[in-house]
Amino acid sequence: MQKIYLDNAAATPLSKEVVRVMHESLLNDLGNPSSIHSFGRSVRAKIEMARKNIANAIKAQPSEIIFTSGGTEANNMVFNCAIKDLQIQRIITCETEHSAVLNPVFKLPKGVEFEYVDISDSGTINLVHLEELLSKSAKKTLVSIMHINNETGLISPISVINEICKRNQALFHSDTVQSIAYFDFNLKEVDIDFVTCSGHKFHGPKGVGFLYVNQKHSITPFINGGSQEKGLRGGTENVTSILGMEKALMTIKADLPEITKHLHHLKSQLFFQLKSEGLEYKINGDEHNSSPAITNLSFQTEKDVSMLLFNLDLEGIAISGGSACTSGSNKGSHVLKAMGVSMNNPAIRISFSKYNTAVDIKRLVNVLKKLLTK
Image 1 (cartoon, rainbow, N blue to C red):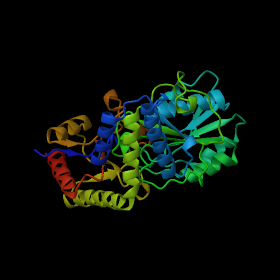
Image 2: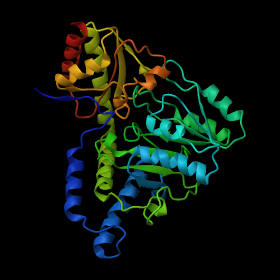
Image 3: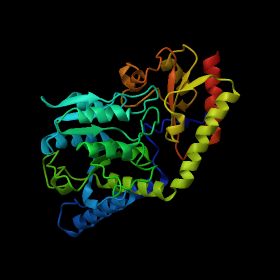
Image 4: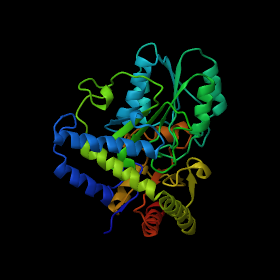
């Protein structure tokens, strides 16, 4: 049985180009990047070239890129350093954020407040309410809104949100884990304060990511130890994964128009096939303002979503019911609950990559029809 992987919002398969780069690094990059001998200097040069290339891809300065173990660490670093170094006293976020944002916010130090901005039934941020929240308090505030929602694919207008923050002397952080590889970023034009990224969402390795810190901010170490990452994150760098992430990002950016077109085609094929087979569904989110790589659907049946996913897995098809980071909690999707989506009907997230095909979509729909109508 041919297995089909359609859970790319959780993790993407490593591309062959990335595997080659990482294999070469494992064999040849012997030195510690902090060593002053030729082996160490060689590895240091590769890290700094990766930093430069990643910065160029998003129109940032190399000095603004800090390598981390992934998006979760980068998000924690933002909140920790914003409170410790930039006198942030209040966080504004929304209930549909990833747990890598919400859980750190729930554990803020005593005296630091947090508030939710209102959202619509599609998950769209209420910009008027955001402005009201920012204008009602003199406390220095950080707003944290993800660019693309990891469960619904909804795109938030981060340029507009950033402008609102600037008007109200607030800082802005955006978790761009689902978007940074698939959208053109120009951080010279959009003066965002913090951006976070994770390599495994765009065919790079797991366990590596980066934090962008706007050069106008001065922060102190998040992880104390050595002087790595400009003294802001102690510990020997994960050289092989950093180089793999660099290659993954460069590869995606080089072929972005073709990849985006392919993802849009897969998504439209999914809807076409579902309608052709007579399967009734509801799109959770705003299909006209969403990532080409992610969709979230509810079906008009009371079948248990866990059993549906289990049976799909038995058929060799991998999708999810929400974020992989919370899938073991058995509490349902906090994102869909916040949007008012009924938990009585099974809701599934289907997420595509450049390696998926129309054949994958056809088989998925055929299996869904079998499972939902029997």
